[in-house]
Image 1 (cartoon, helix red, strand yellow):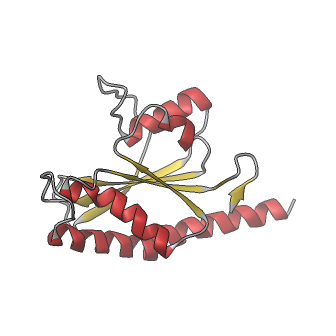
Image 2 (image 1 turned 30 degrees about the vertical axis):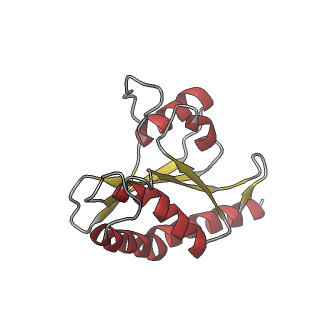
Length: 168
């Protein structure tokens, strides 16, 4: 559903990573595959890293999903977590966390989108194209969870919001 003020969909999915560094490309691959599964109703962006300028982009959406690879050894091979604003900064303005982007979004634009991180466990990080087989398994599990759990719950919220707006 398009936001009439911003001409955007209400959901943004940002794939973060670098496909030239093996499993570091998991975030991009997640966003790419999600865009094939759900081609309409979600806006997709691809980033090597988050930058402070992304706060403006994020401010235009009701819901933001950050998908990225992680070194963390997650129990399921991935994790989906609510993402909350936090005011921690890195010394460089060119590398920021999703939490910092949300914090800046609130501080600068007074917008507080609901947000989630999808962290997919990776294993191989050398300069080479292609995601490892083990990480591909984790990617598939993360996509299945996105399609069967998180995305449907976001659609239900959108439908409720649309219904309540139509009631007035």
